[in-house]
Image 1 (tube, rainbow, N blue to C red):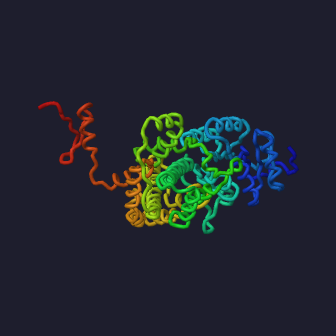
Image 2: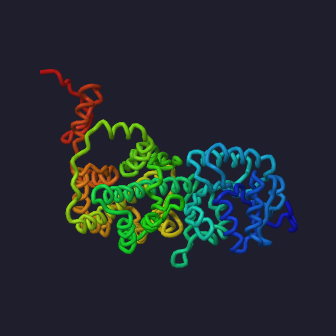
Image 3: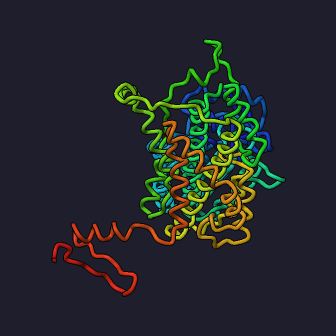
Length: 475
């Protein structure tokens, strides 16, 4: 690899020059940082050098060459696939690292793995940060939402770089130190869980318009484009409108109709659901989104079930404009409740793992660059700024007014969807969560009685303290 620069002049090294690493390197270079990039595929290194055409960025063909180009103590950012690949790269680096070198895992690693890696490297006096990045290719190139966690001292070393390459909202960089240990990767995991939930909610509104209202793709496109000029304004609504205008170059038809309905997942949504269950935090809208991705994969079974069961006699919903207005309100409520579930999980995890998360800061850095950026996040910032001790976003008076205004829309849409046979599990989960959360009394007393009946698990009473057991079959 041709390198005409003096050795040990680079401020940061990047390992992994796929979509994210490639574009992040270019972003750093644009902001005046000298960057060295390495990938085990030499063609990716060559591609970076060719596109850059700048003296502030260059490539290395091996780990030792990369490290030799970095100023000491060195800062190395890993942008490789989560899981075993991260450990393989760390193992390759370790023999060449020196005390106070900094390794930054900027991939979608599971937060539990991040804690293990931090402890392992600390034993060798190597600094480690777990950093979540959201924004995809565009965010990496022009400004992402960045979620760092670990040692505050380590963060300060690369803070100028991260602030420079982060998205900006009103001049504020969408990056902030979040907390110790795996805080950054945990927040990114929950971000992705919220992302799963909102994407499923939007998909259900599409299904309702397509199968329930018999709308054309062109009309559906117009609906999403108009919604993006309303209180629903967000990145996901914006791109959804664009998707319905994309023509397939192969068939000449709209591309959305040519795409398989079997959705994939990387695991972060599932991790969110699993951890929420570990912490006893209900996030049913996100759970429903994860389940629907799994159900979408049962393609052949769904085809057989479609043949086995007589379809409901469906009638298009009457008064389309009223239904579309209701659908807009229903989606808005569903999105608010999805954020509420995610923020409640972050609050619980902060206490459990001693992250000391600031929910206002998290909402603030999500306003730009990331996939779930939305106008609603300004209101969420305000809610936690006014009351940092909110146990749930639903307690905020402004959010309560929004939900009260539109909750009837959600009920009407769900009622109509049930009659039409259009599945809306995430919207239903959002409403059920809301109704259960605001219920002074739930039927769990019967569940407790059942558990005591068949398993002598005992129960508590409302009139006397203590635990009790009843011989239910005694007369």
